[in-house]
Length: 255
Length: 255
Image (cartoon, rainbow over all chains, first blue to last red; front, top):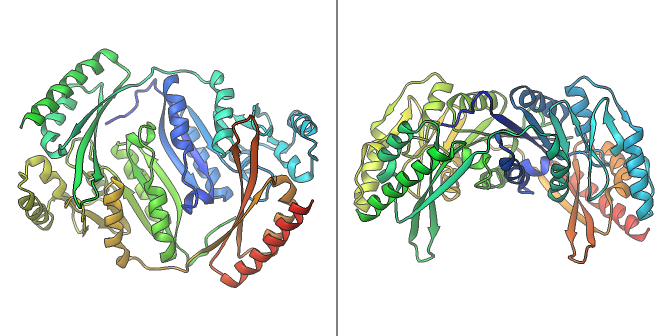
């Protein structure tokens, strides 16, 4: 329904972390990154959540790096033994990796301010693949980095957000996808489906999605409705579709 | 860190939906499915979130079907034009697809009770790939289905949950992965990293993860801490590691 056009700017996300796969932690970075990129005209086209295993990270990053304009990874760049993302990215792009002077200097300045010792473990966070461009970390100092079209960021959402701010000026912007949502209560998708299909066929430049929702009223009854979401880079076409969606939902409500 | 053993029972998840990729809706099914499967001894090893495009669904389902014991898909099995999952699954396994009598009978009974017309659009939800086994939907009637090791479920979390209950008895159970969490306040990963690495090396049968957390105190100050999570199918080894983690964190707290 939403095959991106050839000139679209797309993003892949690789979430690295056993703690997400296990269900212990619910990921919020996918939504955060998608919402950050949307106003820049960059749409997320695929997400992979992989475990803390080098081969899994390498495979996902290589696959998305080839097919997306940009890739954003989150997680696995801290000082502990389970932080293996930097080495995995170096392996994915056949680059060497070592402690780099510029990253080390950032850590030294950061820790000096807080009177924290720069241990060997912390120094691991200055291990940066050859040729990478650093990403500023305004929260805890230790930088992320960019290799080719891949941006390697921390997994703590507050730090991820800070790093996105630093990365934004480096990104080529695309046409912004606008969206309108029309919500219906007491409606069922089945009553709208035939008209929606016609509307979609008449407006291939707009992507129309239909999402049922249910709300437990507590008394054993289920309140139900549908959210109709139209998305397009073409604002004129989108406003035409909005009017048609509103007409359609009014007709259904009167039934 | 957590390469599954050869006899492990693993699950892949394919979340199908532009509404998740766009950030409009935050996925909660990954966590729900992971939490449902964990007590059955089935661990999620990879997740992919793909758009409502047949080629994307086919690729993800085929890839995870080959490498995981089971695959669970969510989304795209409703009555509207953007629900293309059933056809995509049929294509992924080279099966024919058509309205099937058993699925149609379920819809007829369900809609008769609520006085709802079985329109052509609703009948689309009885399109089931050849040879698939149906999955019960206790919330809205329209069934999911299983093809080989792939379970095709609805995306509305309440329905997903109901379908998981129906699927559970079909699943081979594995050894349950147990976990313990030791939380430290006012601690930094860098102070624990060297000891944690030693502990991980001494206990390869336990997977030890270190997750920093930050809490904004509102006054410009950041409260910080670390959650140490150890996971293993070996409860004896896990309890040894738990004691060592507690000793380690007490030592750090005294510093």
